[in-house]
Length: 504
View (cartoon, one colour):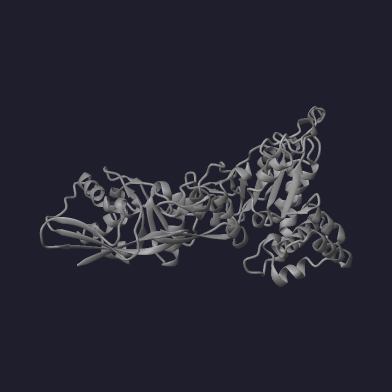
């Protein structure tokens, strides 16, 4: 007789069902695993055998065969331990077959039979809910999986608890969702002295999820401004929190099963590899752009990143998703993020500073910024120069709006956009608008249209640049609580698109 248990295999954020079949047949004693298991799955037989031995359960002197179906799908990870143990226990008639077949399970076994938390409990719970099965997982992963309200989740501390649960000796209570956490950095926008134009650009970027590039001399406040951006963004909605948490669950970044409502803020170092930024590695895991989904990706010292790494950002910025293609895997991850880049104007950093004239000007700046390709620069909605702050200004008291005041305006503008795109598929904010939708919501008045056409002709705006100006103008109008896009909104949006007389 063949006993069956069910688990999942992860392909990106998608959890695909895997049937674990166990047959105990006469023959030479052996314990074999088939169905394309990797090294961690193959080693499960030793962990399962030792865990059962710790419970005084001896395996029979027969041939035990475990098949992971579908057999042509690669199986990776230690979370196959628990479903293999359940299938084996059902085959030995220690626990009932029907109870095991109605359960989707995952978990790593310790040698003493205790269950160790594993990554991916949240997407596994969603897969279990789709198949109308109960999810059985380690107790440490139960509070994470319990956020999927459509699935019943049971968390167990050990394999012995699982056996007592299925035999009716001591039923386990359903797991409860973990706490909702919210990170508060305490960094206020008023801490940044001066830089009013950069603050305004930051507010516009936060309101419409527009990509922003800041260029300025060292110490002018670029990193300070970026660090205060999370304080301007509204909390994640329930849908966004679930989307983001599924990716973080696969990466093992959820703390004690809690769902974080704060938007992610990722700031990788410029020495990060392509696999670290885009995704990949041995298991084609999510990269920084996916971990920043629904949040912010801050790339400081932007030109210092390898050219190949920067160029890989072009497609994800446009599509909002990335396909990690490997010889044995093709995995798709969502990555709708806000890109904030900071750069010095040249290698030494003081090209525009008259007090520290660059000895290689203007070649130094052209060579340094030339590391960023034109097509990539064209994808930034906003560009702002961040000049050095005078020493006398540093002694002045804090001025300007606080982060709370700016966040209130950003939240109001985003609420307008949510209402606007409520019935539109795959669009949430102004930066997502395209085609007829963009033409309808961002159509400027006659004066604004004339100004935009003149600028486009004189400075050679690309079609992408033209549409990005319209999106930014729509966001500026939303911040001003105005229904129509007017000339003043177009003019301000264009001012962030032009650098002197050069269009980017």
